[in-house]
Image 1 (cartoon, rainbow, N blue to C red):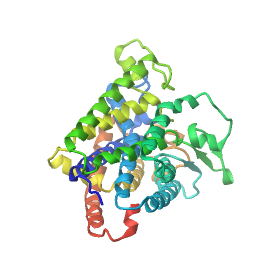
Image 2 (image 1 turned 180 degrees about the vertical axis):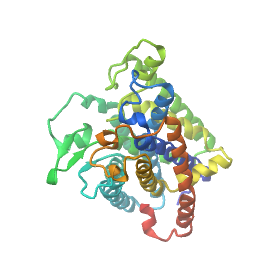
Image 3 (image 1 turned 120 degrees about the vertical axis):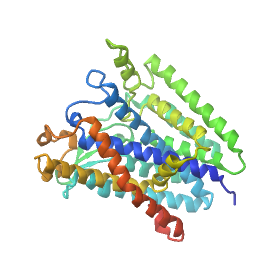
Image 4 (image 1 turned 45 degrees about the vertical axis):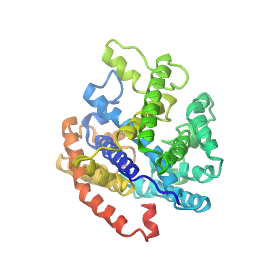
Length: 390
């Protein structure tokens, strides 16, 4: 059976760790930043450079993690038959959907009645894995072409609408539905084109075979990254296809740049994916030889991304309850029925952005020893099959 290069493990774990840490910044901002309850951080007329960059940098998290999940699926498949991998992806996909609806949902709201159920990033990963379970049986080159077709062509669906159609909303259009007992279900992450992003990652995973020279892989990824960013600039500039959130000219150059570099994320546009995946490829092309204390720290988070993801949401929410109690709002205000920034009772709650960074760093540091210990446990107990789902 083929082996993979040791350096691959280093760079992928590093990128996962960086993505996980950056993602926590956005979620901390949701629960702690005073302005989160009043302003859109990417609106050129409401934001400033510090706030904009705080939100903008987190755009890279979902595409990178979805892509890396596909890469990981290929690497897992090198130790399994196609049938075994397909069953594994199917089971893991169903598990992730359960996790989204129950564990992640509760972490966001602390609502035992589950009055609001947003289908977000973990949900989209789960559904994408279920599709990938079938796609891996296609001829290998067909997986690449299917992935590119989905990523490059999905914006052709933008003008197609089916009113109150749950299936269509799951596929390509955000919508709020009323379901059992008056509960609200929101398709926050329609699965197209996430399926294509994950299957592209699966195809790219083949470049980590030991038969491919690392220097060749690094040059190829760097080239793909540069071409993706150039294509982003061209498609974004023409402001037509692939730009469901078109950019506008404003009174100042900075505001115009804010608009230009804010392509649609919900659902992700072609320009959004070119921008974010372009940076992802560049990172992978340049990070295989990185070493040092900081790299080691990020890799600790990257080795247990699912474990970290679940824990960080609960840490953030519990910390927000503590802040609400200490600032006179009472901890019960954080038992949410709606999204945290849409709760009228939280008017006036929150911290300046600088203090949000302090809270973010504190939460990430608090999770470090737990992640390190769990990562070592996984390494020491590879015989435990259930660890593959964590």
